[in-house]
Length: 139
Image (cartoon, rainbow, N blue to C red; front, side):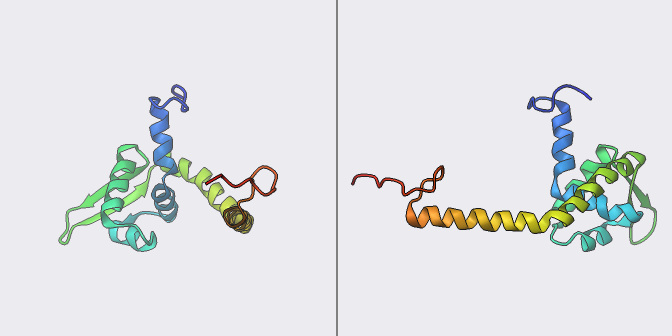
């Protein structure tokens, strides 16, 4: 590993930013089953714009995660596929996906609890630390 990823100038940090991007995770996931064309990736990764898909695919090819193969046909036919490096990355991303699916209920419960407590604090001006009524500011 190069340097310290907690240092903002570390090259590893830029790679972690790329790997942690929601679109990268989803694109690597859909390509786990084999090569796909640009339009098919866009259909499977719902919600991604063509511009963001293009940028993300280009970055993943540049980083060696994907290969881009253009076939000399009309209309043009381009496929994207995971490289060995990309398949290696797919393993921990798949584990994160499984973790998210198993624990999503707990996360939703925590959010609901937090949001409810936030509303209570806003409505009753309750102190975060003790739950006691916070003193009102003098006007």
